[in-house]
Amino acid sequence: MDRKLRSAILSGELAPGDRLVVATLAERWQVSPTPLREAFQRLAADGLVELTSQRGARVSPVSLREMLEIYELREMLEPLALERSLARADDAWRCLVGETYGHLIEALKSEDTDMVELEDHHRTFHQALLSRCDSEWLLRVINWLSEHSVRYRLLSLVPRGGPDEVAAEHERLFDACLNGNAGRAIDHLRHHLQLTVESITDQTLEGIDERELSRRRT
Image 1 (tube, rainbow, N blue to C red):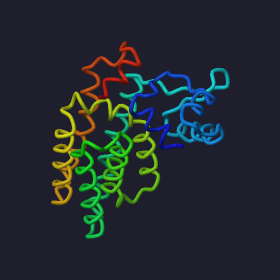
Image 2 (tube, rainbow, N blue to C red; image 1 turned 45 degrees about the vertical axis):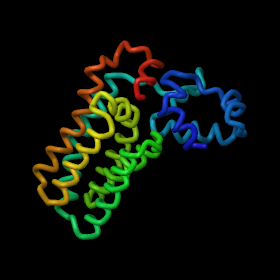
Image 3 (cartoon, one colour; image 1 turned 90 degrees about the vertical axis):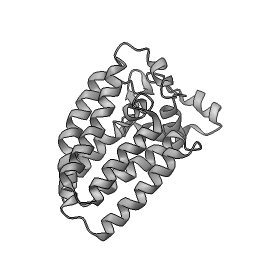
Image 4 (cartoon, helix red, strand yellow; image 1 turned 30 degrees about the vertical axis):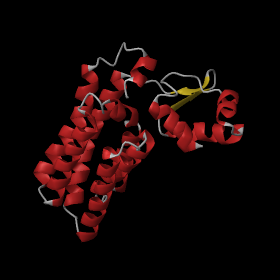
């Protein structure tokens, strides 16, 4: 149930701000209410669903301010984690990074890849890059921020050049990491993060109708 709800949110079937009515969704998807309620709770932890005692559940809204705050922190923390990971890189790490990179590129080039699958491969690749970082708390915070970045990341896909350009960004990052060029790898990672912010800022995210904003992903 988590995957179906997550897919509906990321694809725009359920737009930012939409109320999530258990009875309505249970009937639409032919499922029982209990798994839906449980999915609301789990996706709330990822920042995709907002739960309030007065208004119930709804798809979390998007905002320029939130995006800027999240990415400011990511630009500070992820380069640090990457530097520490590269310092401890070994053959097993290179094998893991190569495998996850291959899956990501394949997903980006396939017309059959849905948003959830693409995000899964993207997250797995970036986690592999940072996996040798020796700070568990640093990685926890980064993973939490990354989860709250998902919709902004997907919203930036088209304006930054589509799947081909995103593949090229990751190729540059991958090559620098595998070649052990920490300085260049960190520069590519920072640029990769900044492009999301620049792409969405240029669209003037604030003031755009939330449902229309969601449709712009495609």
